[in-house]
Image (tube, rainbow, N blue to C red; front, top):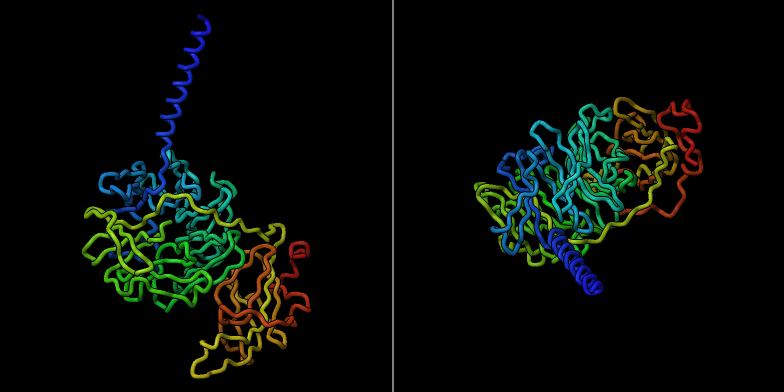
Length: 477
């Protein structure tokens, strides 16, 4: 009798346990294959794609989930508790989503993370300044843009990284530029849109660097006046796709594809034969692209499928006359990027930079066979003043020790003191070593197989009064 009662109790417990597991499984249902979009009632015909401010701070935007198999019947608003939200980013395991949002209209924009299985959110950043454009880094960190109104480096939106609980915040860009639309490539590097804002406004371009802010280099730029908007995203076949408009205005957005291996020399316009305007693009695991597209300015942006192989617009996935669809991501598990080692050592206060030949130029810079005069001196210019002038070696090389996390530019001078060329803003992280082949050289050049004369001597301290700093603070050995 007791044995029979024990058996019944055991079976009941098993039944309750199984039902609990069943209901839990239903509650934790996978969202693989679902599409998450940003939509807004705010029309975008006056968007400022140069500053990025308009689409960065969208009013009353919603992040919405939809099933591509039945998009009209599956709409679920994921951010109903927020005044405005945008920039959804899916974690590598497909279980979480980063986004930026305003809880109230008067609140600054902050970064949040949502558990996609139960829709619970946690606030990652808690800043008085606007924080936007988040992207997952490997091993529990993220990169994002943060605006600083009183930045001593005269920048706009600088890039920062932090842990997923908001701790260990670290700035990684140190120049008078503004950054937005960051993404992390599979090789572990950060690809972002960069634009100079001081002393004058520059042209947007994609730059790439390590998550610690080292090894910055140009990734892609086109003719002056072209407008870049949104993330550059990798496809499975080793290309990077993004949206670019020409100087005539942001209503001319095209899908551009470049090779990861030769981004500066492999541009393909995938939509040159398609009339209309593309606002965003996202590579799906199927090989197709999700695109935000409209045929004319009088129509709203809708979500379509696009075939990059045939360069044709596919089926319409979602459209509504009440909203513009501005961003879309697919929920799926994808490969985590590489975790790159860091050479940054915060106890060291300087970095090193070497140039092999300041007189080496890209031949395309020469106009009608004009040859640049030989450089006599090089001036190092900071944000507010000159940091010193020095002579390069006979072979055109120089070797500098520069205060870390301090922006500077190099100006080449002829023997009369006239400025020949000025490079873009540079910064070095603590203990970073960098090198360049020449001055505005072809980006695909490799250095000549010789030892520059400059490295046979001690590096020149920059600024010129750097020797007044305690020796241990500038020791890079």
